[in-house]
Length: 105
Image 1 (cartoon, helix red, strand yellow):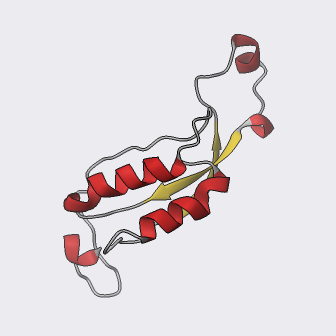
Image 2 (tube, rainbow, N blue to C red; image 1 turned 30 degrees about the vertical axis):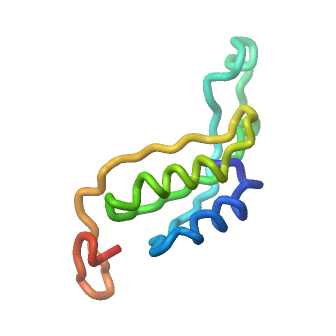
């Protein structure tokens, strides 16, 4: 998840990676732990912070490079810069061709 205003910078940095597989971007809203108790109790849905969720599925040999590039490009040093979560994908199937696993990426 990244700050919306960082999308162009992050996209440019990721596209510079050889064989970058692409990504899906979704607008999301949420909040983190950096709220005081009064703010937590008074939290309203319209107070959630807007973020962009980037989903990238890539072969394992590209994970470290993509994560490092994303973190470097999205960093401002301010609260709310975002987070990166990495987890394995068990299966992938390209609907159009029926290709599976890495061939489907």
